[in-house]
Image (cartoon, rainbow, N blue to C red; front, side, top):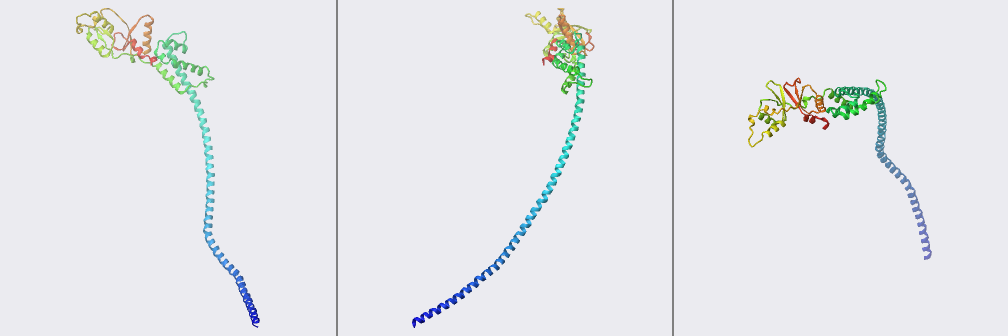
Length: 352
C-alpha cells in the first residue's frame, strides 16, 4: 500500500509538474511572443531617435554642402565669363598690334628709303667737295682722277697723308654708288650714317684747312741789329728758341740769326781770356755774311701752302730754314709767327 501511495504521489507530482511546466512554457511563450512586439516598438523608437539625430546632423551638412556646391558653380561661371572677356580683349589687342606693326613696318620702309637717298646724296656731295679741294692742292697731274690725286699729293701734303686710307676706301664706295646707279633716284650701294658723317668732316677740313699760324712758333722774338747778344742768350736759355729774325733801325728784315751762328762765333773767340757778352752786339755775329733761305707768307696762309713752299725749295736743292708769317706777307712787316722744318714734322698727323 505504501508503495502504491508513493507511486500515486509520484504520479500526481508528475501531473502537477507537467501542468506547471505547461504553464511555464505558456508564460515563456507569451514572453517570447511579447518580446518581439516590445523589440519592434523599441526599435521604432530608437529608429526615430536615430533618424531625428541624423536629420539634425544632416541638415547643417546638407546646407553647407549645397552652399559649397552652389558657390563654386557661380564662381566657375563668372570665371568662364572673365576668361572669355580676357580672350576677346587679347584677340583685339593682338589684332591691333598686328595692324600697328604693319603700319610701323610700312612707315619704317618709307623712312628707310628716304634716309637711303638722303645719305647717298650727302656722301656724294661731300666726296665731290674733297675731290675739288684735291685738284686745287695737288695742281697739274697726268690725270685728275680722285685716286691719282691721292697718290700724287700724299708725299707733299700732311692732310692727304692723314686721310689717304679713308679716302681710298671712299673712292671705291663712290664708284659703287654713282657708276652703278640704276636711275637718278636709286642707288645700289648705301653708305652707313657713320661713313657719311666721317667724309663730311674730312671735306670740311679740306675746304677749310689748318692755318699756318696754328703750328707756328708764336710769339716771335726778333731783334734789331744793335741789340746785345746777352739778351738773345737769355731767351734761348728760357724758351729754347733757335731762330731769330733780325731787323735794321728802319724795321727792314736783314737776316736770320740761328743758334748755329752763335756757337760758331763763340768758338772763334774762345781763348784763355773771358768773353764779355755784355759788350757783344747782334750785328757782330752777322758779319760773316752767311745768309739763310727765308720766305714770308700772310697770316691767312694754310698749312698746305707752307708744305708746298718747303717742297718747292727741296726740289730745287735748297734748304728753306724758316717761313716768317706777317700780317700781309711783307718781308718788312712785323713777324707774328715762325715756322721751321721741325714744326712741320711735329704737326704731321700721319705720325700720330
